Structure formats: structure tokens, C-alpha cells
Image (tube, rainbow over all chains, first blue to last red):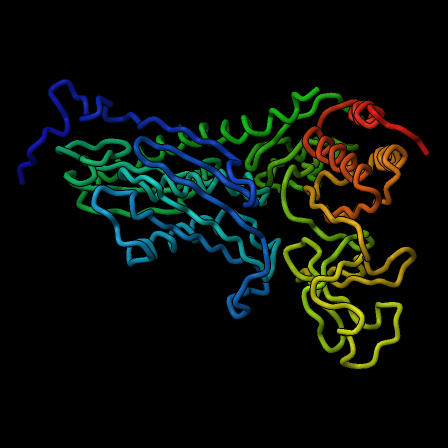
Length: 242
Length: 226
């Protein structure tokens, strides 16, 4: 299959001028919503994501409660206006899948044993989408959870890698995602490098997979530093009042 | 104040190791390292590394005085919201009135506020509260405001110095629940002042010399001091 546009030019630059191992611009702000227990606004390239965290609170309906630990309910939702062609609002197959994998990723880092019978609700709203929304949402959720004061083993972080025009690259953009050969979003716990989420779309050889995986992990660590800075920026100001 | 230096820590931050220190509240241990589990302020007390949370739900401790709002009247007690992740049970045996079975609604109903004491917290975090203690009763009149539960110690102050100060200058009756609910009763002007002071404390909770600044704030246009 021949793509109409050249995803990587002769100088090795991508469509938006990035190198193969370069991330899009990321901006994170913690604590943006007043009525939520914790919140975060994130811009990752053209992605705009808003996350609100509520809880821990008693899980309802009652039969979903676990007497030994809290349940984590992440709800990923794409706004109707987040994509070029209006998306039919409401949950669909894709958003249910993403909600499930993000919930399971967050469960691994939150100290859920401290809150038996409770639920921790994470609402992820994608306001503007441009490839890699699930890792953007998960990254924002990590900051929002920390902002809510929820005990965690680590702040989870996600990043994607993929293959375009025969080359393995970090953090796919919109055209790259649509016309590329493979997409590999992962989420890790950056302190221990444990994998929290790993999905793959497309085809990669084993060598390509390993290279893409390394890129994604490298990207996660860069994003992790931005996350930590966002939280500290928000709360270090409280020390400077005097 | 043990150390003048205050430091914000975030989850996953390594705070020390088990060789010279011990893990306190808000921390966990992995591979001999003490690691913070939540967003908070680092606090070292006699070899223990603690993280005092900046935000988060009220973590009920037995003996705490709290302000609760009745959610539901059951046949042999009430379910009360005390700002914790779970509703607390107030059993008919734990109130000072003599209640016949099924008559609970006559005494406390949905929406009523009470001052209560945490009686019991069990392993699965089931909460029980009681009204059988001095100065505990159903709240009639006044206002209830919500603050961050982690800021309550600052609002009360060392040996209740801060709250004593506010009471002195505003002539309001105030009860501070450990769960972050504060009950205020007095004239409008006084309440306004209490609110100003409390929100100032909440915003500047981690800074030094706060008591003096609050006193200045209250002294301004204070007409009569009790």
C-alpha cells in the first residue's frame, strides 16, 4: 500500500518536524476543577483531556463492592466534537474497552486495600483528539489521582510508539496513526518499570516490537517528569505564602 | 516546629531507607526504601518518616469529635454521613434518648446535623459513632462549612490557640469537627469574620507565623473584645 503523503522525509523528519524519537509538546495542569476531589487538564500535541477523580466513596450499587479492597471505575469518554466528523455521543465498544484497560492499569498502582467497599471514580473526558488519547487520558488520570490525595505506589504514566513508513517512531501523531503500520500504546509504573497496560494494533516483527517498546518506555519516563513537575508546581506555591 | 524546612512530597518519591529511619504514616516500604504513598508534607518525628496529607477524605480515628449529617433513619439507628468514604452507624443505644423500636424518625431524620464521637472503626472500615459523651447533641441553628480535613489541626491550633483566638474576636460559638466540618453560630458579622479567618487558615495552612497574621486580620475593625 502506497500512502499519498510521505510520513518521513529525506532528512528523517516527520510531518510535524519531529525526529523519530521525539514527543509532541505536553502541558499538564493539576487541580483545575473545584468540585472534584482531584483533577487534571492535559494537552498532548493536539489532544486535550480533562480528568476528574471522585472518592474514595462508598461503591454503589452495593453488589459491586468488594469487602477487601476498593474498586476503580475509570470512564473514558470522547466528546462529540473531539474528532473531525461528529462522533455519536455515548459509550461505544471502543470507549468501553479503553475504560476497562485504564481501570485495570490504575488498580495496580492505587493502594486499594486501604479502602474496602469503596469505589474510586475517574472520569476521563477527551475534548480534542489527535491520536494517543488513551495514554494521554491515563497520564492525566495519574496526576488527578495524586491531586485527590489518593494513596498510590506510583504515578502511572503512558506513552505510545509505532511504526510509520517502515520506521519505528515514538508518539504517533494523527496522520501517522491513520496511515502508519503499527501502534503500540503502553503504560508503566515509572519507578519500577512495571507494565500496567500494553496494547498493539498492526504488525511488528520481534525486533521492531522491542525497539518500539523501548521508545515507548523512554517516552513514559520523559512524560513522568512533566507529571511530577505539574503536581509540585501546583502545591509548592502553598509554601511560599509567607 | 521541629524543622523549619517544609517539603512537599508526591507519591513514589523516595524519602529514606530503613537503615537509619522507620516508615511512619503515609509511607510504604519497598526493597528497604521508604516511599511516599500520597501527596503531602514531609514530617520527621523521632526517627519516623511521615507524610502529612495535603488533600484527601477524612480518615476516621476512634475518639475524634465529628459533625455528621443524618442520611437515613433505620429501625434501630441512623446512617450518618461524616465525610468519610463510608456512612457511619449511630445505634439507638448510643443516643441519650429512650427510643422505642421503629421510633427513630421522631428524634433524628434525614438532613439533621449532629455532633458526635467516633466510637469504633473496624477492619473493614465499618464506622460507629455515639452521642453519649459530654457536649454532644443535635445541632439546631447556626451554619456548617466544609474545609479540607487535613487542615483541621491548623484551624484548632496548638492547645486550641487558633480557635480560641477566633472565638475571642468574633463572639461566635464554634465547633470544629475533625472530619473537616465546622459549625458556627452567632450574629451575621461574626460569622462573616470566622469565615474569612477559616479560609485564610485553610489557604495558608503550611506557612509559619499564621496565628499572628490571623490575629491581625481579626483585630482589624474589631469593636468589642470579650
